[in-house]
Length: 330
Image 1: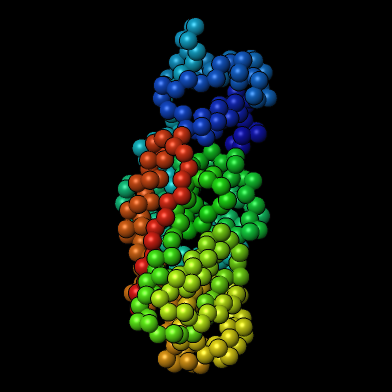
Image 2: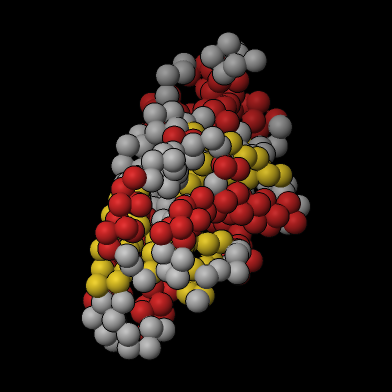
């Protein structure tokens, strides 16, 4: 039965639960009076009174004359959590399992959720549409893959706890778990032993806050390198246009770099090696031995998952940006 087709008092019940869930109310917190409810929603006083009486008889709220109404139970907040992981299908060509980094990321996240006894749900969204109805049925959703074109309006009305992983948005709107590649870039330049080398950094054509942050961190590390380096930066599409390698190969043949790093798709490595067998290739890696800029998922998840649990326990905690440092492996 859809919300629109259900009786009015059940529609109001759903509206109130969504509102209280989104506000992070807990047992003992005061809720709105019946007159306040009439003012903020399109329901008659008769419907509001019936709904509140039903909730009181079910032991969900308690009404006290002269004091107001209070939550006694929160049916939407159970010890058994339903937590979803959703990625942007528009930037992961054939699906998440065509992308080695995202595949390892979702497997690590799922392992942590299931090990904690919770239910794991996976899905996708696009730049234009987000499955907010599904998200509202979950306790928390973790999202990744935002671009400059992603429409964000739906995020403001989702009642589940929203977190971002390996993605960020302007302003502290949600808890964000991002990767910091600055230390890994600095370690790479420090490991050169004073040699002056030619670098080809592959920047992503897919514009996002994380793409811009990685490029900025690389430039800053290059500028701080003990020895000045020769740097060239080109834009590539490592997600949905992997077969278009003309720009990459042209840059490799022209520059003949000592090191190719950044957004290096795994299928490009043999192409680069075919031109420069001795070139060192340092891509972004997750749970791989390298060489490259490596993120170890176990310690990362050990930080993320307790934080998500804490946010669910207290949804009024202010949003924050949590950074996890990648490491360089030669």
